[in-house]
Image (cartoon, rainbow, N blue to C red):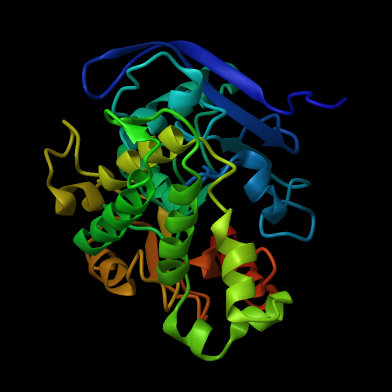
Amino acid sequence: MVGERDYEIFEDDVALQSGAVFSKLKLAYKTYGTLSPARDNVILYPTSFSAQHFDTEWLIGPDGVLDPTRYFIVIPNLFGNGLSSSPSNSAAPFPELTYHDAIAVQRRLLTERFGITKLALVYGWSMGGMQAYHWAALHPDMVERAAVVCGSARCAPYNRVFLDSVKAALTTDPAFRDGRFTERPVAGYRAMGRVYAGWAMSHGFYRDELWREGGFTSLEDYLVRAWDATFARRDANDLLAQIGIWQRGDISRCADFGGDLDRALAAIDAHMLLMPGATDRYFDVRDNEDELGKLVNAKSAVLHPIPSLHGHRAGNPVNNPRDQAFIKAEIAELLSK
């Protein structure tokens, strides 16, 4: 049926990390596979920037990275993505949300709706990877394994600069007035896409013209078809809300850890897989290298960069079999522990 919703909603009044109460906050989610009687086969797979669950479910399948014939997979849609509570579907003003808020509501969903108290794996790419890190630090009693794919424990200064450039490109559009968009920023979407195109892929990707592997006939053809309209499918105010969550990201930014990142990393008990893209410019390998040495209480912790010229997109290789195979093998090894 056209327009039929393929996901569920968890809704409640929620006290946010800021102290404000969000009335009727909505968490949209979708499940795949069957929950075992012992409720011990659960994989949580949070969404990334601007993504909705159907954008990332390509990775789920009997022969995929996450197998729904063995695991019960839950994709919670991050706030600000247009399905869960977002500026586009909520009363103004929209509050400043954090990953801590997202994880708190995701935990309520799992425990209250499904009776889940253990997660076999939290898997996430980019903003999803940052959520996986938050889960491992905030709820070590629940998380057996975590795969942080092209993510980090906090938003690095370099990452913040990138996001500021994205905001600047988007908000230069005349549709941005008095702190919000009053109509669709057509020029702003295109400018944002061009900024993203430069940061998302590596120097080597462009040098070696790897865009040709996707069937593009020229660099301009690639930029127009792959990036110019990428973000136009999302509400611009929603994009700004998610950029804010990303920039505020820090596993230690809470009462439990008081801003002490070393303490937050030491709280992690899970088997940890840090899998940055070798050429990722958002989440630099060096940040994960620094974090690895501080995961002193993890059951195991390994750093296995994806050997790819696809930059940040190596972590979400929809049409890239080589990087898919690498990720699939790494996750199979992690799940065997």
